[in-house]
Amino acid sequence: MANKWLFISGTDTDVGKTAIATGLLWAANNAGLRTAAIKPVAAGCEDSGAGLQNDDALQLQAIASHKLPYQQVNPVALEAAIAPHIAAQEVGKTLSASRLVGFCRGVAMLPVDMALIEGAGGWRVPLNNRETLADVARELSCPVIIVVGMRLGCLNHALLTAEAIRRDGLQIVGWVANVIDPDMPRLDENIATLKRLFNEPCLGVVPRLTNLTPEQVGGYLSLPAEFER
Image (cartoon, rainbow, N blue to C red; front, side):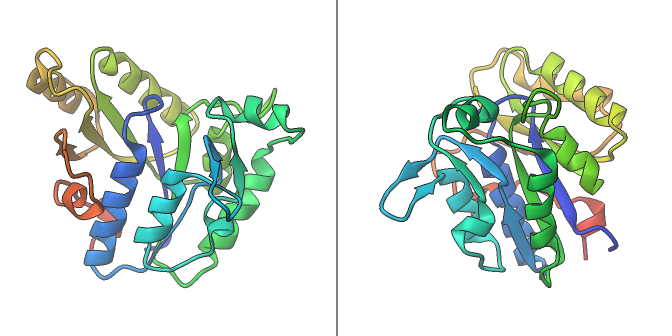
């Protein structure tokens, strides 16, 4: 397995990237893989006495088998729950792809089999006036998993996201249907449509769960072929 990277992107914000990421980490741990995870930039952080921390990053930190200090899991923590580049500007910070790539490479140097990177929002979330978070994945040549939040409008979002990732020259190793709206009209038909239109495998369909634990989510997921043992 030459490539340790796995980049988790979503079709939008609030589509369950963290739930799927932690489920995949659980599945990888369960398969005997050594895992580490990083959320290089997170907006929407709170200070509970240990500095700014993000709940998504804390979940990644807790489930990855290689235990890292919070600052390494989430090196850029921003308080405002808004677009990261705007949150950074408001506190006098500048985001850059090269800096985030450096943080990610530090994680990949660890003795792990999978280095999972969770994005923020969707594929084209801006970092500054020239770069987006996609530039981080491109620089690292990351295989990508798309988390499709199953709700009205998701077909367009999913297909546009996949088109953009392919245009950036990256491999999509799979996608996950995460049921955000259990009352979505024709849910099964929408999932079937995506299975027909995607060339890449569906790694799982995760129903709307009341007890959203990594173990429970991971039970609905398969690892990409590159990470199977």
